[in-house]
Image 1 (cartoon, rainbow, N blue to C red):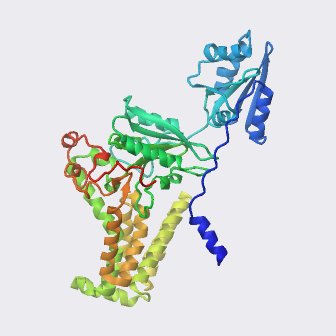
Image 2: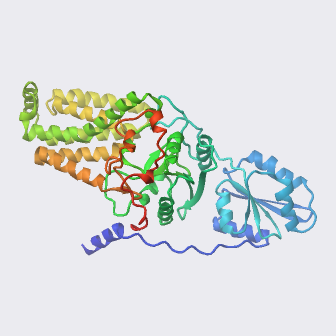
Image 3: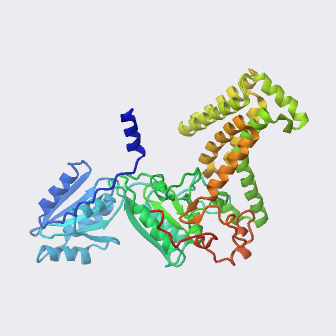
Length: 512
């Protein structure tokens, strides 16, 4: 028992402090010594290549990682011009000649430590080393393969750009820069993950962003003590408010560069993670889940209608099964008289209680959804057919489940996909509302709803109230919440996210 408690304490206890990083290892003047030390750091990895050559008494070395550089540019743009030139003087003179007169690569960086050599060659650079010179030259000739720019599958729009983020960080930065041609747009790079050393980039407008929010974001990113960062979801929990326990996230995510540009113009900060085709957005408010790019491409009246449909679909997705179970189990008199007989007959004909029956159907639906999502696409249709035949037809005819319950579950499932970014909290809250309705009736549903409401009203995203501008209320900002005003009215507003009512940025570092 003591061992079990100790293991739980180690798992959920305070994260261990990061060990202080060792001092950087400076390069030496010996080419052989530098390359041998580099090979030892990589433990003789097969993809580390060192090409050595000697010209007029000066020895050169070109260090690359196989598969990370463009071989054609390396051969014709680096090795050929370097080998065809004549060199006189010291190795340092040869280094300066290569840097300023021979190679005209757009990206050139002088490297002074072995750690920097590691970083650059693993990022697709070719590093030129000269025997007798205690520094190297990194050349940006990346040539690794990546997916082409295409429309994201999870964030489709009818009227708008069909471009979405891809995996390489630099391409994602260019997609944003193409849409915001202003020098006020700043890209600031950082590295996270002690082993993966993943590059991340902060994108913001220098005259619009809040310095307090920016400083707090950098402090939270510096506190990340992960060894590997393979996706943006790795760092999202570190950006949440300390002590925050909520199903909803204060960190937004988008795969569309145009959406990210719109958020940046409102004073927010976008975080691009190398290797991930999406961007994190902070601060993020609850009402933004119901806003899409199509809202601003269509007429205001139609955008207002679709936004109301999203709000209604969200409440149906989380509360309809719970209300149905509560009314059917404890308050059947609330059903219309024409419907009461059919529902009562369905409940009486099934072997399980209504609450258990609803939970079982939802559980089976989640299994089918996960199976259809993970299995190969050609087999996904087979899962749909089996689910429709076994659950939709056979189970109802056999009397295992009721037709009204199945209809409620189907309507709930459809509504939950209206806002895909809210599916995870919606799925959990749906089960909780069913359990509350099964045990406490309609009063249990109301009690749980009040608890969820209090939870999101007390939540903050970088000291900005999560439910702003509804609570605290702001009439100006309400023009883009339940009703989407026309562009002539929206263009008059110069407010940013940090000017939301209730925002307190004075004690911005208090929760650290």
